[in-house]
Image 1 (cartoon, rainbow, N blue to C red):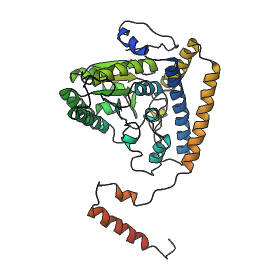
Image 2 (image 1 turned 60 degrees about the vertical axis):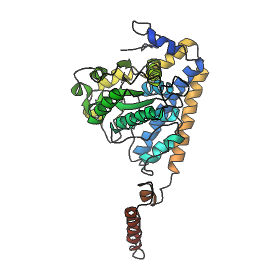
Image 3 (image 1 turned 180 degrees about the vertical axis):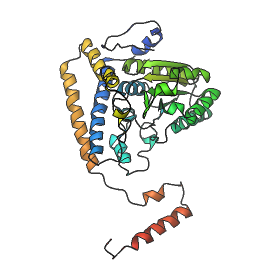
Image 4 (image 1 turned 135 degrees about the vertical axis):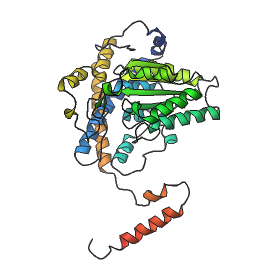
Amino acid sequence: MVQLLSPAGALVHSAGTDEYLPFLERLTEDDHRRFYRDMVMVRRFDTEAANLQRQGQLALWVPSHGQEAAQVGSARATRVQDHVFPSYREHVVGMIRGIDVVDILRMLRGLTLGGWVPEEHGNFHLYTLVLAAQTLHATGYAMGMQLDGSTATGNPETDQAVIVYYGDGASSEGEANEALVYASSYQTPQVFFLQNNHWAISVPVTRQSRTPLYLRAGGFGIPGTQIDGNDVLASYAVTAKSLDEARAGKGPALIEALTYRIGAHTTADDPTKYRTPEELASWVARDPIVRFRSYLQGLGVEQEFLDAIDEEAGDFAADVRARTLELQGPEKDVIFDHVYAEPHPLMVEQKVWLDRYEASFEGDGS
């Protein structure tokens, strides 16, 4: 397992990490501060969104508490020209790529069919609720990059790559394995970023696989690396290296980030039914934000900065709440207007039927 930052927040110089040190040298103090801000902001947003769901303002919420380091490090390793395919828990990745998080809440409130146009929001593609399907979307897109000649040209400033996020549960689905077959066969410019948070809803990862998940990559002829997913520096460095190699035409890679889902799978789930308090406590003690804060303090980052981030996160959450409560329902035409790219007679017929159906209730007090 690649670990560059110990649980106590100290840099680790161990065997096998030398190849990642040049990527750490790319980082400035401002980058370190940005990593910390990203993690604190999304943690506070996550809490606020869960509260909104419990208060009846969202149909569902998907927590990311505990997985901030894996997501922030990998997202900050992407370049502006890269394309990102999330599952439905990568809130901070979306934030980093330019998504307004209220658009995520708009979708989970049931007010939109997707949420955003990827090309207008940092090439951050739509959330995938049919989990593992995004691995095929990402692989197909990466194959398209090859056909378009937009990768492996030798220009790292413009060469493109794809990163796709999925979980340990999705890794057992057929789509994920089919995507790995095609990625390997076509040597796509792609990184599979597998967040192993130990639970596929109520199924433990130990029941899904008798070997570490990163070893599965070898069966497809793809290099696999396991990282400490609560170490934002490891996440950044390993992902940056893998993406650089993908853009250069060296093919796909798989990264397994060992982390933990502190909260429920979604707000429709009760994790107390299937995991022990002792297991949860052991992972709470490995909090990625606490770890990185200790590292920053060791570098001499002032307390005023840390306090200012906490205050900013509180203001951010309050703004998200206010704007969420102001959201209005869409016009019913949206149900029909975006099913097909061009007008379609079936959609026209259904829209007319709905208008006629609603009109039938006029005047009866309904």
